[in-house]
Length: 294
Length: 215
Image (cartoon, rainbow over all chains, first blue to last red; front, side, top):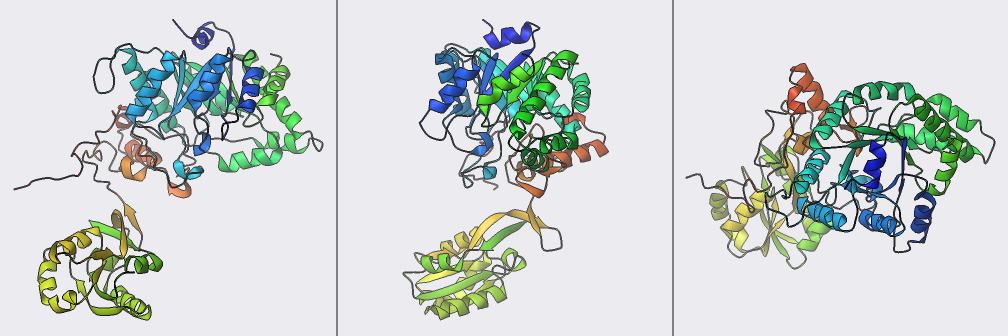
């Protein structure tokens, strides 16, 4: 049976996903609050997997919490922290607990996080992980052994449409499609013209693309991202727009910009939906949707 | 092939030698000399530093190739000063430490260096890792650039999202291996190699601990 998220992807509707980051610790109240805010407003909620290589409550724990509260989770799985045995085992477990959507990522490098001396695993890469999912679905594991009970997932991946150079990213995008990716959530995009060009390429493939919308909370944050986050380029006019907002209203301006972009993407049918990343400000996601007229 | 080493912090060396007051020092005239970690000058400097710590240095040598069996002959030659030492401080890569250990019976052999990687130099004093000795060489498909060593994550199927303007997310000065591979394959008109799916690596190409019998 297809997942609710997969049904939404196939419905032709404009699909909206968002994401939450689990806490560092065992106090889950804030995460529950974010889940409750989002679960009826979006088609599915991603749970990040030790985002930025910072050790946290696990992605699968966040996904189970979403299930318990009646939402639709997307399990983010990076290749950084588990070898092929652990990745497969977690997929088996996720399936038995009703988690049906997986986003496969390489994972940030260990030294960017808060356990800088840890061993980065990367036994599989994101393309191999996608194939591992399809292998498990066939009733076999990566060792070629039979499974007593297989899995079934809606599997996705990420792509950076503004990477420079772009062609290596596009080649990897194609490899991910061949490996079985059904949907893509993109790195943050701000330049819709460039994104439209990327979509001309992506449209050749039978996959759904959700444009990554990262909330800009201030001009300084936008500048920082442009200068420091790989693959993110905030055009100067947006930075100026944020800077021109009266004191104390930059976040409101950021919400307005995000809402405007989503509305444009939807109106122009640029892609199949959006993935909203509010990075620590999940409580404003409903405001972004409202600003987008959704 | 060069074994690239870095001298351990002196405090760590002293800690390792805590129980020993009489020390014999052996350097290596090959790799450790090239990296200035265990050549003639470094061995002399170490001797002075240990003496200033109150250690008695019974003798010192720089073995031409410390990983080679020449070590055995030199141990023989310096038998007296080695026998009168409580420990041997080895200023070579780990191969030299092993070779020395094989030749001095139960006498403790302590490394003064950390062995970092097998590398090549660019002629300007910069040494970089080019081979991780993985047992399944991919250089033919990767335009001569090894993704196992040149990519921080050792990715086999293309760049991650951390690449930025041809640089790596862990260091803005470091080239993204996959941009290099892409550029060179493109020059060679062989981008189809990059499109080819690379399956998960076999980490048991030679089971650990690795051993090969040649004859």
